[in-house]
Image (cartoon, rainbow, N blue to C red; front, side, top):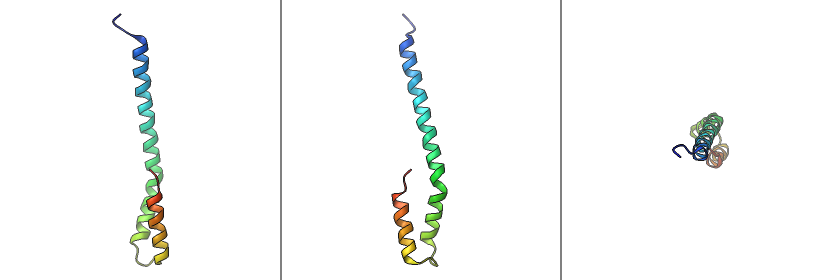
Length: 65
């Protein structure tokens, strides 16, 4: 048999799963991008108290994504 339907279905399912994972990754990155920018700004701003800057650095390290 030249065309195996089961093999084709498995490959197609694998491709769709990879696309779903990639789409989810893009959503998570976009979700946390603004939060990262704000935390970086707080860390670099010398007018912000040291305790707040340390807390922002800690939250930036623990942020996933």
